[in-house]
Structures are given as C-alpha cells and as structure tokens.
Image (cartoon, rainbow, N blue to C red; front, side, top):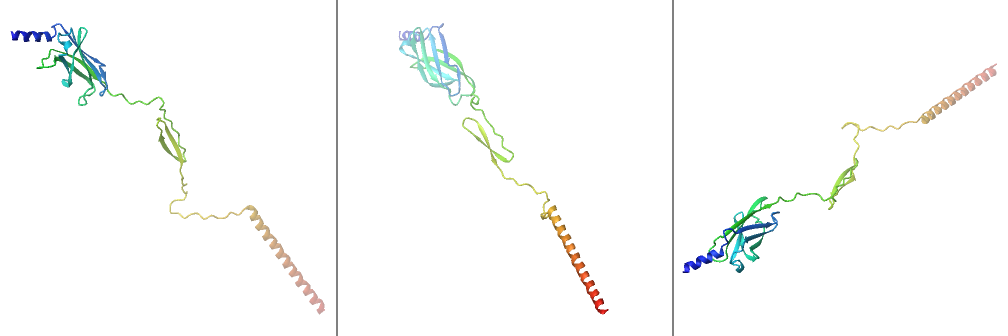
Length: 226
C-alpha cells in the first residue's frame, strides 16, 4: 500500500505527456557583459507548482549557472525566471546554448523536462568618430617648423614657429674669404684727373717764368758789356 501511495505522488508532480515546455530569452542577443532574462514555462501547470515544489536549473553551454529558480503558478502556467550574465570564462562572440532542467526542489534530482534556446553574443561595436570631431589642419610656412596639438573635441591644430636658417656661402669649403675692395665712383675719378691737370698747368707756368727770367738776365749782361 505504501508503494502505491509513493507512485501516485510521483505521477502528480510530473506534467502530462502532452505538456509544453518553453524557454524564452529576453533579449536573445547582446554584448558579452550584458545580462538577459531567461523564462521557463510549463503548460499546463503540474499539480504541485502552486506549492513551489519544483525548480529549474539553467545551464550555459552545459555549465550550471547559480542555484535553481523556483517555479510559481501563473494562471494555467508554471513559470520560473532568472537574470543571467554570460560567464567571463565563456563569453566569446557567437551563438551559445542555454538549457533549463525542471526537477523537484527537494530529494533526488529527477529531471521532469527540459527546454533550450540560443543566445548570441554580439561583436563589440567598432570605434567611430563623433560628428563634431572635424579635424582641422593649418599649413606651416616654409620659414618655420610645424607643431601639432590635438584638442579634446578631436580637432588638430598645427602651429608654425619661426626657424633661423643660414644662407650657404658660394665659395667652396676651405677657400679664403674674399676681401672687399672699395669702389671709386666716376665723380671721384674726374676729381682726381682735374687736380692733375691743374698741377701740370701750374708747373708749366713756373717753368715759363724761370725761362723768361733767365733771358732777361742774359739780355742785361750783354747790354752792360757793350
């Protein structure tokens, strides 16, 4: 008689063969560190659902996640939900499987039913410039060097600073430097020629005077002798 009673309890805790088990993920994709909600539902609700005697264990790629979620009756459904974050040891980009196992809350774990769904981890968003980030550039002049600085808004400013430069010498290395020679202007040349001409005329006048004095002295000597 005791054996018959135990059998009756086990049958009442299990769902009918035509019961529907569903697992819904909201959302069903996201970043590796984003959380989502897993909802396990059984329809129709088993006889012991209203007492909280059943739980659902969730498995991420066959790895159990935390403790089981207690099932509660909502209308004709028996439902359990849990907030899940992909484990850091298995959160690669791509499709992962989440499975729910429904079993008794106490006693040996006897899985009554299972349901599974896929969750996709999206690739990280690519870096993009904001619309306000419009880089500007100023051209450095040929007589200076350019210095570039970036502002927080993404603009780039190039400032030209003057740079001293040396004009290369036209003479080859090691050759003596040229000595500057003062230039004589045409006015100075003419001035020197006029001075020489005046000197020559004065000399001629002196010579003519000396010659005339000699002639007069000879003439007087002859007159005295006669």
